[in-house]
Image 1 (cartoon, rainbow, N blue to C red):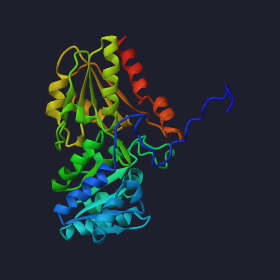
Image 2 (cartoon, one colour):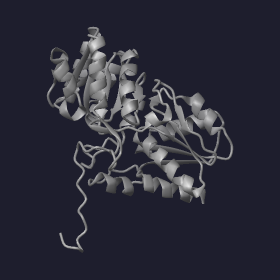
Image 3 (cartoon, rainbow, N blue to C red):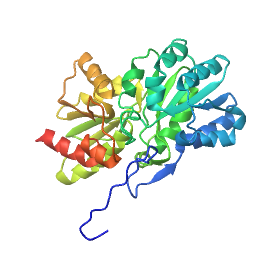
Image 4 (cartoon, rainbow, N blue to C red):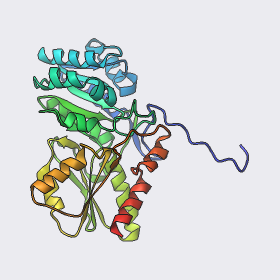
Length: 331
């Protein structure tokens, strides 16, 4: 490489970590949490569609081989089998990629699992824009699909702590759960905020007088970074983390959004259609609450392939892009 050649960005692999360079991480929080829980609950089984290694379920397979089921590249069979096991009293954790668990297996999730309110936990990796492999693997609309299913509980963890605490919580919940799965080396940020996951509860991580960011998933991590950065410009940003998308903690959201003088921004790693933004907007309008309201989300479009840092900048969900967007709204 000569002096004038720019270093080439690494292409984002399908299983690339979402952690930035130097960020604290924990390895495979979902896999380790499930193994620990399975030691206490013999009815827990694990199933996957040829993706154990890429959903961290290989740890469960190693620890509990007699309770692990490899279904092959057949996501519809995966969900149907999980439903059958739930009928027999097991608590199945079914893992695959979010695009396959929602788009490809939707009818089986809807009819086999949800209609009978079966106790299946669907934990799906590569949610939203967490892979650079293009529309075939980018689950930009997964929340819109599963939010439309009656009785479905939906969890979108922020980091490793959120993920490992959510595992026993969703196992204890009776009924179907869809959890967006963060896998591999997952960032660890919420331990700095005295955080504890509670199913169905939003948590105020930091207060702020100028802006309230209501966020879920990895966009909560980004919102916290934005809040720290904007302090230098005397902009006070509060962050309300919403790890449970359905049922939504409307009471907390309404209470926080009712405070006057704040711009309310919903930030999510999902298309603007059918996700947290629309859910929050509906809750606020129904309650007669009308603060200045904006969304940071993925566009209603098929997204490009490429390196994740480039794509996050392009679609406005990187920390720097969020900083500039919020500054622009504040004028």
